[in-house]
Image (tube, rainbow, N blue to C red; front, top):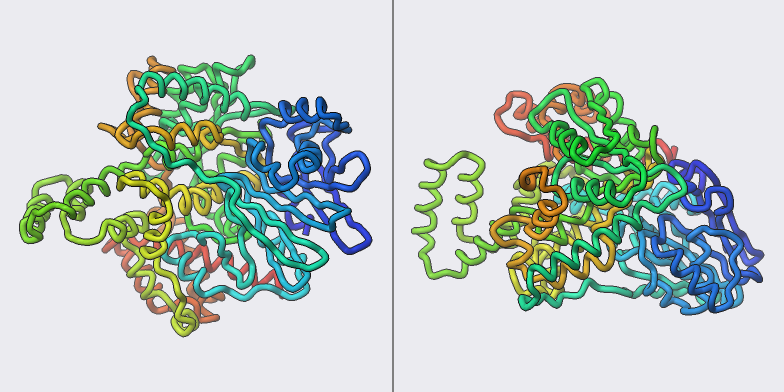
Length: 606
């Protein structure tokens, strides 16, 4: 199991095995206490053992607190605070942790295991519980090596969800009987009775207030964000910043430059084709803050070489094409640093997606007394008179229909209906029980948010953020043996964002609070940059360097041979995409990602 995760920890490996058959294994990427931080770690008498994937940012303060309480330490590693916190607080130790983590604590005397995952799901944790046996790992590939059976049976419902959304929503995994421990959850298991208990230990407060002045909010955000960035810079190895030139990464870079005694290093990625290159913006920011800035260009040849290997290396498929560019820049940065700081989480916490305001407008129109026929007439006029992209969006919000369905259509590029036509006989026969809109409504209903924007932010925080954004950041960075950190997910920053009125977060512009903070921090920019997603020229790639990968999947991919996908239907998409009749890059990419992953799964089981 450890050997399958050497990319997560190329520097060291360790294991603890007791006479009852309990085993803990760990791979280590040495960040804190490089020489003395070997894992697993134990307390003074060896009755409590712990392993950790990730970082506990407040470990120094916890270390001092525990020392005052009489605990003795043998290293400076953050992992060691876990065993002493467990002695002090038991399962409630999660309440005092600030960090990104998946950990296990084994209590020898009580023959009891505690697993914990961080509040937003920056670090993954998979498990399978059967009668009197629990197996867990940071990645599906490693977990499978710890099972007596092959554990390679696809879960049809999870596959349907993946084809619709491009990711597998937790607690599911793509394999039957293997689950993900959800963010902000802990799991306990007893070797004596074999029962598993899972509970949530934290929720993001939903107590928004319009009474707080914007000035007070800004001051608190400034102080808190500076603290969060400083904590993410703590390491005994070189640290850099991934800089796209957008609001989030520019803020991180600006505060990191201010906090660092040395010149910071920044890294960005660009492309030789397409119109989504943002290297000029990153270069401009780097000049202003005085960073040691480096760029890598992802060429067509790089794409053809990199993508098949990257998709085969994923423990669970993820159809976010930005994974390719992010892995490229992580691999490039790893030549110079061991830790990189990024801007993940800002959009979901600070209302960064323009669709939030469009959805709010759609909701208001749906609740109005305007006749549907009049709205439809307005939609036709918009399509004739406005620029294509904006006209399409305005036209869509004028159409009658549930706002949740509109959201699902937008975030999937309207691909769900077309994805269902790609189902093969095996998937159709399984009748998978997944409805993206129903799932979204359930998440929104339990969020407690009162406004449309707040509700869809809560949905993204529970689904999109952990299962796509953070999964992408974790896999892209760890496959390059680079640790990724984000200050926006610091507990204090997240709770501050959740206390702000929606009108403050999403007023006349998206991400208003962060834009104002950036304008204060870097007035030389002359205003905050426009919103730009981390995009890649996927359409061109699928017609160019990735076309052989598409062809090989159609010719001999296991996804078609096993009946999960329909070869004829996918070929029609390829033909339409090649002829530029329509952009089919989203469904084609999803097919290729699943197919490459499944081929590797079957090859590894052979």
